[in-house]
Structure formats: C-alpha cells, structure tokens
Image 1: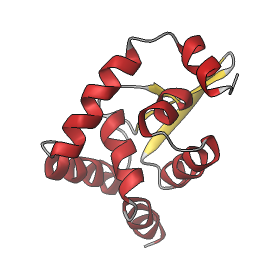
Image 2 (image 1 turned 90 degrees about the horizontal axis):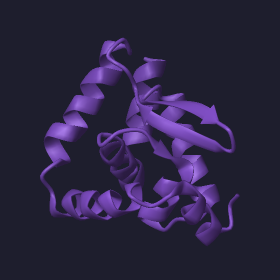
Image 3 (image 1 turned 135 degrees about the vertical axis):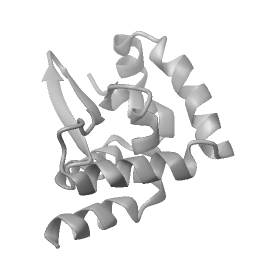
Image 4 (image 1 turned 60 degrees about the vertical axis):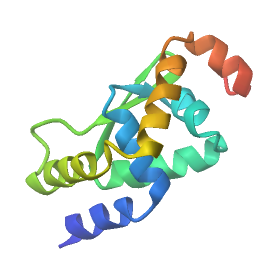
Length: 121
C-alpha cells in the first residue's frame, strides 16, 4: 500500500509527469531538466526527490553533475506499470511533443554551457 501511495503522489503533479516523459528520451542531468522546464533548481530538486522516493527514477552522480533516468526493468511491477501507463497515455500529447522538441536542442548543448547559463555550477 505504501508503494502505491508514493507512486500516486508522484503522478499527481503535472510537472512530475512531464519530467517522467522527458526521461523516456534517456538519462538527463538536473541542469538539463531545469533548462527544459524553466523551474527554479529547488523546485526541480523537490520534484525529483518525490519521483525518486516513489522509485520511479534512479540517480547517479558523475563529477559535479547528478543524472536521473527512469526506473529499470527490474523495478517493482507497480512502478513499471505506472511508467508504461504515463507514457502510453501522454506520449502523443501536444505538450509532450513540444517538450521533446525543446529537449532535443538541450541535449545537443554542452552541460557546462547550460550550467553557466543557470549559474548552478
């Protein structure tokens, strides 16, 4: 029951769902997520914390950057089904398509440039 409640809490916010959809394109650095949505770094951090607590995403640190990715195929079935449901339900929405287009540009930009622009590193 606790796992289910954590997942539903994580999915109850539009911005967290958008982050999950963005991560469908692959692993992203926190600064890339911040750049994509234009949120304050503290807001992105809070959203990522909730998603991580629900086991929907995984993280790793490399040098000064922290990267996030979707949970792996070995995640609990509730997590895998929630991620599949989000993607199947929302992947073709106009908002997700716009986010994907913007993300493509962001992923082609050097992380150091993004960080300097955000003054985060």
